[in-house]
Length: 388
Image (cartoon, rainbow, N blue to C red; front, side):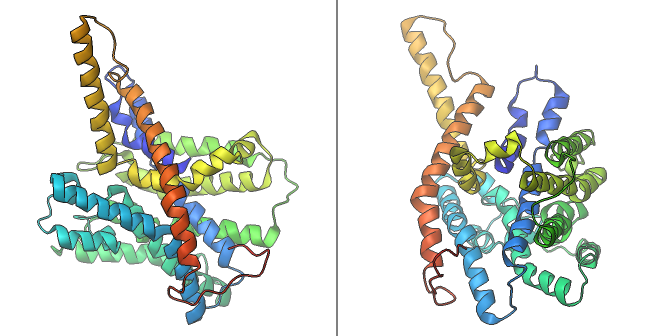
């Protein structure tokens, strides 16, 4: 669901002029899928590791091995494909004007591009969120340690955010490719600005680990928080878009709503999913929906950028071909590819089909191979019945 919301946000402008402007703005703020992903990551990593982490070299290597197996293979393959595409086509969307594609490739493949305003949306543009994600992965054991040993949980996001503000105050006056270059960039596109969302997910997991999945309250968290999520979207859609940016989320009120209010609504939504029996929960549990969920990471990586451009160009060529046939037949029919909204549906279907195929043929086998390899730490088969 989160990846599909991001898809909608990136193509909201494709609707024609007859589509209400406020709805375009509303759909343009569906980047909230990223916030959902950040809260979910905070929850899942904490739920899986909080009660059994040991800050030892072997434990940390195993932890990193699992994270690499999940995130890195498809990102590395698709990033390499993006720069290969650039080599053959010169597509400026890959490098955004950078004069050194080799150095830019290295910044992308190592996730370092996410710290630079000049480079954050190069390569696979939406991959900036993986820099944020990796920062959380590396920070999580320290977050757990401080929370357990020193009982200093709530102060951590405040310290990290303060660090972000200080870095902007320092480096906004230094011309180094936009490294911590401005407040909107740091607050919206880096872990240091977005850390509170992860901490909300962490706190949700700590609460569930302590109290379990049963509760006596009759309050419906699922649907109430679902409504609150889209209230946040509406608030952001009303904000003026700052010059040089694309959405209301980059405005001051948008940042506060997205980073500090929306994530709480998302956590309450997850709590409802975990503790309530609803149609929403039953729908998400359907095997086909679970498959789409497993392949959604690939969908997220390919829905925008060189591959998406290739598909959209193919649809346009099909439209031209259909009209050339109509001219030969001397008929004035509508083409099935002449409507932007319908082409988006085609694109959505094809992207999902490709995502599921890549998941089954590449991502899942690579994930299992790395986990069972001796990469970083020697593989130890788990006892029967224990699942990672």
